[in-house]
View 1 (cartoon, rainbow, N blue to C red):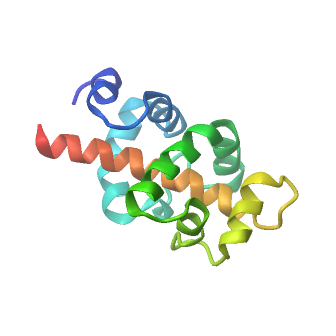
View 2 (cartoon, rainbow, N blue to C red):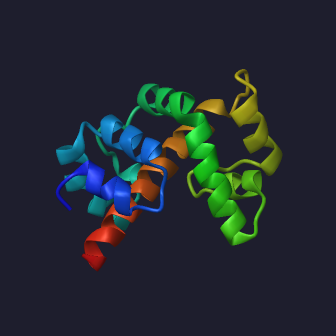
Length: 137
């Protein structure tokens, strides 16, 4: 796949979240070179734009609606409540209620960790979509 436009047209994901992840990753060239590693090893491996809390929390805050829409779709596909799915992310050790509070209460003690996890979720899902498209091309 040669362009972000082509990727957006072929992906089942919303183009806005794709473009946000690609921007955060440092642009198309940077994203496309890291996507397979993210898909195979997870976002916690340390990828440009998604390493520091200052990056990931700001990214989630700026793209919260799109990330939650993507997460809601996945939770629905899994037949699971949204906050239960988020609380079950491997990088989190929280309850369903704590996940909900972190998302909706800016003063939540868990907000930084949950927003970091949601940024990683977005990176992983966009990377997975990209990798899947490469395999079918």
